[in-house]
Image 1 (cartoon, rainbow, N blue to C red):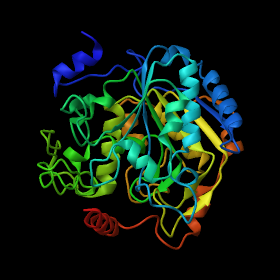
Image 2: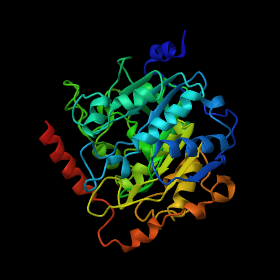
Image 3: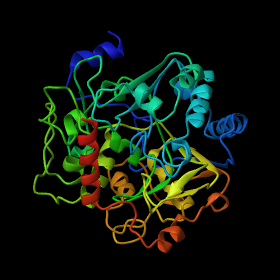
Image 4: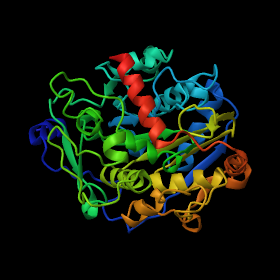
Length: 406
């Protein structure tokens, strides 16, 4: 039986995914390749990415003959913008960077690509429709590599069921997560995201990107209400942020219903759980252009151009280096910038054995951190408005958008 056939047959049975190294030490270190990159021009992107991949040992051994799933980071919806700027210049990873990475992986022998995201929309649109609403052309991705597929992972997809991934060491908030088959039916899992501030977890990077894995059909605000119509609400806020409800669609309840019901405790633990349950084989940080002040455009945000790219094979070590390049301390904890009101998700993932956040144990290849550092910390200190929106305002805005779309 093929791997895909075997996975379809087991349904919700526990699936243990192999990491790149079966005997890796607890909280391992792994190198991170860093380079300046001034623009999204095709020639510059290909040259810089190719050099970064080569500095990590090349792509061939990782992707040759493999199915590659690339987790996008489409937070905020396709019509939410910072002024009139394209989404790829502010809060979504730039489409030309995604295409360049796919092209190089294809040249290295990748067999098939699947672009995946649990999109924020209260409807059953395919991922391609979501892209077009943001003025992205799905044909760009289809021409970047052979055998490209798209999957809105809020739904069960072709198998007609979710697959259950257990969290090693029994997990922090959930012992397992039920996910779309695309996160299991792949050989290589890639996370690509921009460095940004975040109202709940301090910063959002390639680790926070995995918060979009839990399907809204099972973990969204509309669980129970929308099961019959196969329509999902556009947020995981009530359940994963505040613990006001428990999962649906047969997913397991959380480990301890008496644990804190506040998002600065819950969301970092969900993220740490997910990066432990679904190992990330390749992390790409798009720091060419981004924004400071929030993960989704709001009045506190400002467009910035740090001008760097980073690539790593460990999602925690890559996040630690990116944090340092934002002038934040990856060793900081709750009560300290940028984790003023939340636990440090890097520490939690480190304690689960995913990777180290200690820069002394991380080899930085290529451009030194000091040469690409962009001072998000000083911009944070100057802002008079809070980062992003309050939890109550987020919930109200999401409810308004859902009602309008329905």
